[in-house]
Length: 222
Image (cartoon, rainbow, N blue to C red; front, side, top):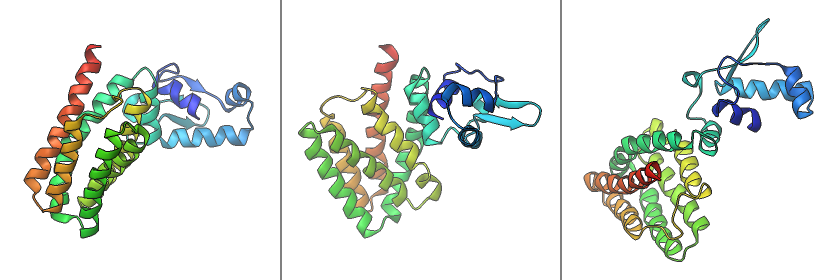
């Protein structure tokens, strides 16, 4: 599934290309059951469609489930990396500041306290250069903020945000030491949410994402 999915999003297998279960069996040395299950999952993602007497046809990008974490990761890992990063960054810019504002109104006491603790731990791990630990804290911070917004649609984007945050490090797009200003801004967001100050939480989150956009602009010109 990973190999075929990657080839589809990279357009090595272009839209309109027809696959067969027999080809998958021969190419990967798997049973017909495994081949069929692979196609079932890829069809659920919108990457292929299966029709009797036609075969398994690769679908154009417009049909893909672009929020599926596996589709996002394949795009980040392949030739469409820059475009995928740009799309996800623009999504985050549009959604996360509003989510932070909503979290200031709707978060539970436990969620407010957890955000403060996560921001403090991020500063500690970031300053020490422990990127793996910093990453896990960063992912929890942003996904918790989406959940605490009280908006189920924002919450549903948690997996997509998680994948792109993890991808920035795995793809070598993060500095060895996180930017100090960014760590301070995470603390500012947490404090604003804890105090119920939606406007301040929204502004601090916009500033966080401005740093992300700056990193994207650097990527575009590199």
